[in-house]
Image 1 (spheres, one colour):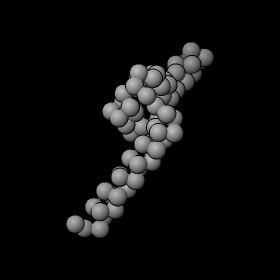
Image 2 (cartoon, rainbow, N blue to C red):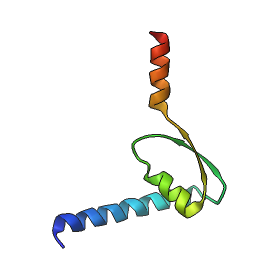
Image 3 (cartoon, rainbow, N blue to C red):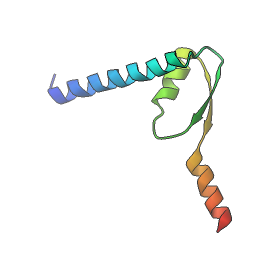
Length: 73
């Protein structure tokens, strides 16, 4: 394996471990509803759904802000 590939794998594994720690600290359990205020990071949603079977409610702030700006103009 080359170093770049190995670094990427380790980075992905540490990112996933960090997200799982967040889920554990939130004490997620099956069927809990979670409000996810959308950003470019969707990894936490994937882990929450797959490992903790939570229900995700997503709020896209940028879309809402775009609508508000259009209404004001």
